[in-house]
Length: 280
Image 1 (cartoon, rainbow, N blue to C red):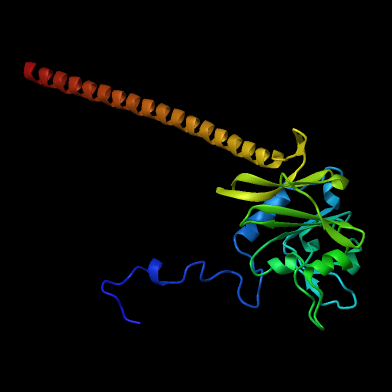
Image 2 (cartoon, one colour):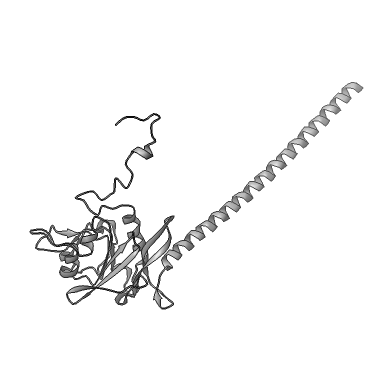
């Protein structure tokens, strides 16, 4: 490869983010920025109202060990919700993983964020290989029997929900991209707006009914109100600062006037002294 003259800028010759995705061959599902802020958005808005907060576990990329016969087998959901388990109150009690045979409670809801490297497995379109752990779909549906399974595709902004009926997941009809979970008085929906200074389509929790649909922005609105309150406080402080600056300027001007008076008095004194000297 020869060097051009003049050299081309780095933006044209070096690999871009499309050439260097987080999902490497053999390591599907490594987190990118979307897999970081989307679970946070879910955690902020998914708060079941009929469960005390100290009995709700919300987990993101926390290993889920599901089979005591194969204790090293695990899945790592992008986000999941467990009800009826104690939430850690001290740092030393924070979970390093979620171990089913120790906790005794299966997750109630799992959300997976579709990505090219994991989409087929997330949607149950892969088969279990011989002498290999079961697929993610098999674990959620057949082993843990998680009541609700939701997938969100950020490329099409499509939300899909599955409910366990009998022994199989049945896909639910979501014509308005909203899913209501009656057991916990909580829903999920696709929301468009600004989150952490980024315009996004995101999957959010919904907790109140508007026009017959479950649609929650209360948590986001609360955060917005807090920001507005902080901005008002900053403006108030800025006004106080301006007031103090004006007072300081006034004092400085007063000081200048006093100095001028002193100078005039000194000139008068010197003039009087010279006059007396002339008279003598």
